[in-house]
Image 1 (tube, rainbow, N blue to C red):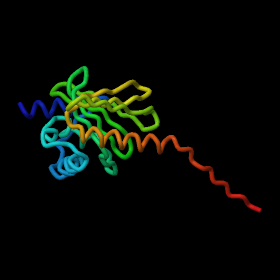
Image 2 (cartoon, helix red, strand yellow):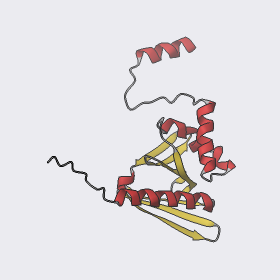
Image 3 (spheres, rainbow, N blue to C red):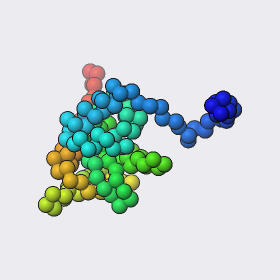
Image 4 (cartoon, rainbow, N blue to C red):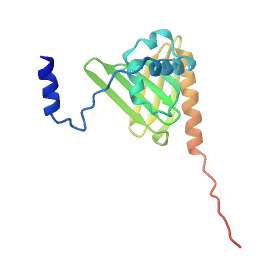
Length: 165
């Protein structure tokens, strides 16, 4: 049976939209979990499928600066702010939804707190991403980083001219 599967895989062309994700090394997964913990993620978040899949989405030189795990209208997901972009990830056994947002298309972020529940909404040109979370500290760190990054994008850069006289 195993021989037949290998033969089928060899004969079947792999399309560009099909991507097989190999198993992630424990060292790389440990680094991702360490960055998440430093930013306020709790132990429960480390066991979620989104956390285990996150190393597949990150670039080699990309670092996690904030995260929000929580519920949204279609289930459970996570918003991850890195130093380069914002990722929305919802991973289930037979389904995965990933959106990538650059800081240039993010218009702002809203954080609302009612008792022990926090609501984080990232407003972008692609639409709004709202998560309900119980980890207020993690949500506040995420919102602070997004606001800082959006302000940096909004500042006009000074043009430098070299005048030859």
